[in-house]
Image 1: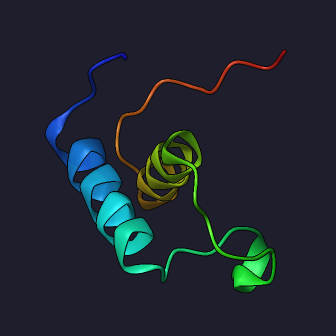
Image 2: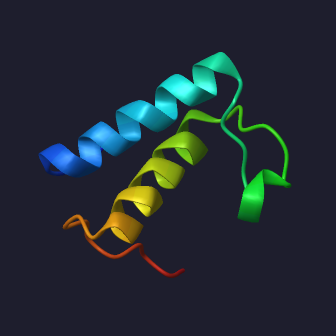
Length: 62
């Protein structure tokens, strides 16, 4: 997995903890259901860091 800076790592760590406790939800305003996937939790953490203005590389569009 790629390495990111301190701020994005903190955001991902927070998202992983919320996933573990079962409070991390997907979609806008959490209506998409509970997140169980580790990869999805990482993506949500990076997305949140991006919204806060942290330096995170753009996501690849496939």
